[in-house]
Amino acid sequence: MDLSGKIALVTGGARGIGQRIVLALAESGCHVIVSDIDFEGAKQTADVVQQKGVKSLALQADVSSADDVSAMIDKSIEMFGRIDILVNNAGITRDNLLIRMKEEDWDLVLRINLKGAFLCTKQVIRPMMKQRSGKVINIASVVGVMGNAGQANYSASKAGMIGLTKSAAKEVAGKNIQINAIAPGFIQTEMTDHLREDVKETYMASIPAKVFGTPQDVANAVLFLASPMADYITGQVVHVDGGLVM
Ligand code: NAP
Image (cartoon, rainbow, N blue to C red; front, top):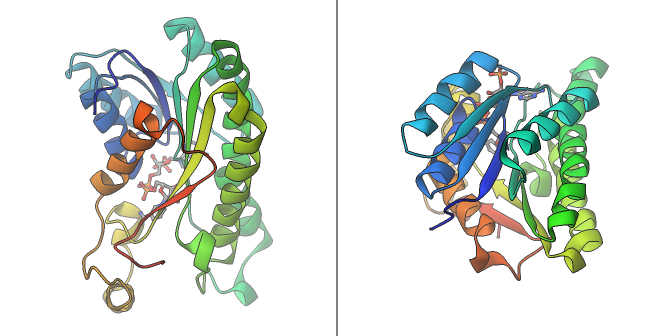
């Protein structure tokens, strides 16, 4: 995929799926802004990006803070002049059965996963409207479509992201801005490494492809949606899940 010269901003880009998305965009020729709550991690990833011959900028931002997000977008535009691609990737889990779920864990997950995507999308839309082009890619989850016991907060946040994707896509489709979501299934990262073996086996049994996904599988879908090949695709949810949801 050739995305030479495009400016991409990835939230939660310090590690995991976000880091692979950052590197894949850089390998396709994008200059990449690596944003994360963990500045050291973002900086390390941004250093790797520069070794690929493109420009990068590491920024610390908590996506649930309107001030942080505003500063993140301002600094990005100040340095690069525009943002062509925004990937709303930052996300957390605080799993528990509904009956035991603390209100603060509900609030935290909704604030980072859903409000974070709202704030970043809202802030980037104005410059994208001015430049009359842009791509926003929201990293949701299959559990936002199918639900998951023990993840009422996380599933609700990801279902909300899908609603946000569709509504925002309708609002800006006429301005040549495409907004889509990706719903990864079980992807091997630190987020999933800590799960018990029996839980992993249960997941595996429900995946028709009989293999877990990799961060690169998600990054590949990002590259497609970020490219001109997807210019007539908006408001969609692309499942990257080995057939788990169909
Ligand atoms: P991860 O390894 O935990 O990475 C998430 C990154 O986001 C971390 O660098 C984290 O920083 C950062 N972050 C956390 N809170 C933040 C905030 N408030 N503002 C900015 N950055 C923040 O997670 P992952 O597995 O790569 O997941 C990435 C995305 O894919 C998430 O949205 C997740 O819901 C989604 N997803 C993952 C899977 C999967 O199987 N792994 C499946 C479906 C969807 P710290 O390390 O400092 O917390």
